[in-house]
Length: 266
Image (tube, rainbow, N blue to C red; front, side, top):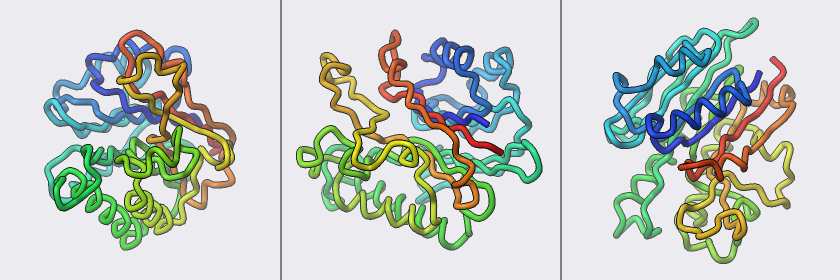
């Protein structure tokens, strides 16, 4: 089973890129973040025509938004309003493939603004509170029990080689010690397995995002691993492959994130 997560940065604007990816790579399930449209505006007919008739959507006008598109039947499990902020940042569903259902949690963690100080930057404070609630939710509700995948744009590059320069980014939002600490606590609370790092050792560079600000993003290669796929301990032994489709960052009018995929034997 092939599962892809992708921060698409407006699904309606980039539907041609989504179609290109689905036709060429054909994942079983696609998790999208930053869809930036209300549920009724989501291009459901386009997904159906591409062979993805099963959808779980949590949309919002102009901001945020997450969705799950699947070739296989989905049972929506709802969305949690983290921090009671009214943001569309989470959607959950079960996909029916084989015996026990596979539960999917699709996340778009707040970016956190530019200043890594919760006292002067409300966006950063919100991000830290969101991460605290993720940890508590995982711990208190046993989220990682069974066959579970938590994936999405978590907006933090936790490891030294998840960024182009550990030293240069220590005071840059997405790689600050406090963000890394809080994301690690959420990870540890579920005993999650870092699916991408199962295939690329921690001492090797691994990126999923390259800034629009770079004049030549590929040549400078100043990336960060902001997109993650965590699997529950039960699924750790089922991991078979992973891929970050770097070339998609170079497509016409691209997202600044690349599709990130795992393959499981289920």
